[in-house]
Amino acid sequence: MAQMKRTVIVASAMVALTACAPAGYDGANSSAAEPVAVAAAEPTAAVEPEASASAEAPAAEQAPPPADVRLTDELVGKKVARMGNVVTDQDGWILYRFDKDSDDPPSSNCVDKCAQVWPPALTDGNPQLEGVSDDKVGTVTRQDGTRQITIGGWPVYRYIGDKKPGQWKGQGVGGTWFVVDPNGKKNLTCLPTGTPKAVAPPAAGDSGGADAGGSGYSY
Image (cartoon, rainbow, N blue to C red):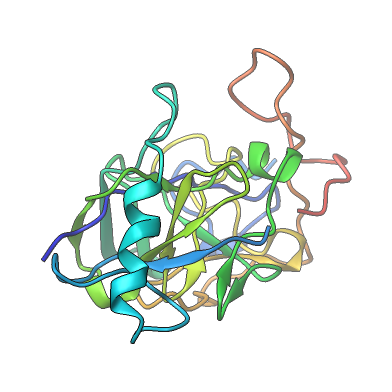
């Protein structure tokens, strides 16, 4: 089976996670969907699986991602203390899903400034999968032509508020962002009190976001 590569981008929240807080917590649009893990001889078509012949052409026409785009080379499904089932990228960054996206058909509504705070997990084709079933993994084509990884049909992201691998400060942000489990479902095991707000988009030349407190961003 040909497995596809992904770019993961994880995000985090800026609110106290009480006893659920991970170690190191400081307290302080639409697109065309394509299933990813399919047999090499099979086309990738999300809406009309039977249209195998016509589905091959779009996959061949997709341009590779820009050289400076960080790709996700691996998806790892595992259990972590307090949070339970999560999915991380190859570097251990926890991934999230967004309630304002869609899984049927898969589509991403996090663009522009939202995507600066919640970088999409991008792929160029064949990520390694560990603890995540290949029939749960796919891709969706974003507005800029890049391919974003989906799990259970839901596009997945990193959060720039997570300052190191294993953090989940993005949990519950805006009441719409949640840690994703290996089936694409929301992990609701460890929720913050209140509704945390996202950190602000990074300033030009800054790779991280400002502190979340009072940012006013709802995505």
